[in-house]
Length: 448
Picture 1 (cartoon, rainbow, N blue to C red):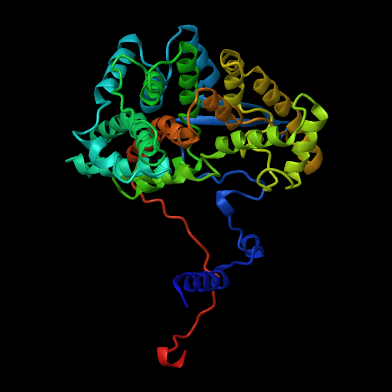
Picture 2 (cartoon, one colour):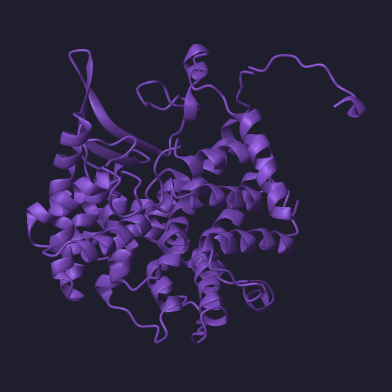
């Protein structure tokens, strides 16, 4: 047999001997995916970093409520309103809040922002020797490779003291935009034959401004573009300890591993389409809708397309309306609510009012269609991914950078959780798995 035949054969053997009867999970009371039968996450830790509220108890019964997200006890809506009313950028302030558990005063914020700016640099020739070598379309793997290579430049890589880990985290928060955007520029040049642009960050600019500056050939952007991207970073910076990549941060930190390995593991977790890639699916779904619906202003035609999605007759045949519903939120995702109020402004600036009208129509129709078809009565609403992909497309961000942009924001939350794990825990996270195989006798090779 040739190599492919051997691999196919081995895959068949693996499948035959690796499949577990689904009924056994119920028999042994196994919490599949660390969730109980009602889909509620199993409590595996305590955190003071963020809180998600999606239900309230009324007369002893848990009922859905409008979603609330709090960073360090502060409602995300109030946090965003605070810096937006002051016409400031908020990601740096949010990062300070997540890491240190309190809002900075003016001088503390200025000092912290200056520190991040000072750390926004890479080792000599790092771009040439690491990022430009072996460019890949997969920006998340490129980003992880760069993070692991940065470890080679750190003489105190294994020092897990609070001070040293904090330094490492702040440096990675600062350089993630450079690593991701430079990685994309290398791919865009060497693999797609486009012009190569490597811009230096502006030390006086915010994180969101620098992302746009690094990405665009002319380094130009509007104030509205930068502010909406800043909001996106704030909304994606943290979302409780139970999401997949943040839990990965806790697990790998608990083993005593170094900061670079922890962040690379978190990147690998976020990369999965079930976690960080959903907004790409939303954009692709709408592109398919435009191809297959003759009148995008006709609610009946759009509803018919949504039904085809649920019946696995359209787009990727997965039976999903991407951007709708959330594992925790039901009535509303507070991040989507905040985003929605600014999407219309950007759509108007970008002459994409018709696209915005289509998104608004789908946001209204989809919950009704899902409720009717799936008989879901807890409530289904648009999640943050529904609008983030649309926003990124209006900002002319390439799809290859959608998930890395998520990482540029979420590393603030990952860093906060790594520090929390180091401060409070001294045990390795080691879950238990129930063995279900029968004992087998060893058979000598000559007798098999």
